[in-house]
Picture 1: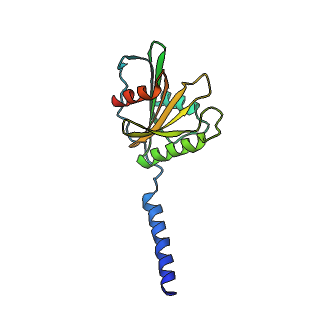
Picture 2: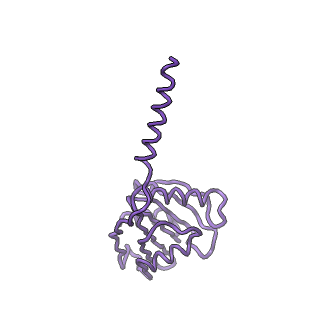
Picture 3: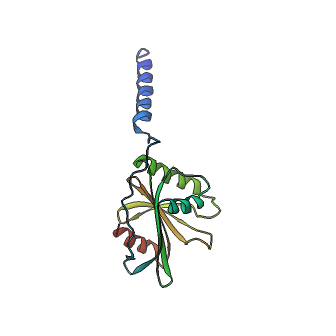
Length: 173
């Protein structure tokens, strides 16, 4: 048995190294094309503003303390009476970097963030998303974010039933 212990330890270390080399997201490279257009009308909602490319990324960077590794982005704001929502979509270098960004946002918001409640994961039409509520009056009250492929989505909603509106919005992606 004593002869097998070094072999088991060596196999475990080799497996860990292999996982780190193959399983970790790779940095570098260019973001994948977004291939996203935001419609003028989203259901009954009308688009009031839209930013694409660098102007969208400048606005996104302004909202974050740290610079993020994304170069492509689009933002649209929609209204219907007093109800409104904002859609942000940014492109990552790859799927792994998009997931990493969502993980970093979730950890950064955490339980004691000054502007957001602790994120809670929920199912929105078969997609696992994070919800956090804003404590700032300058932001939309209900906020949702998730990664899908190499894209990261953030949707802020001001409506009586934001979870139901999110499901309707996501059905049109």
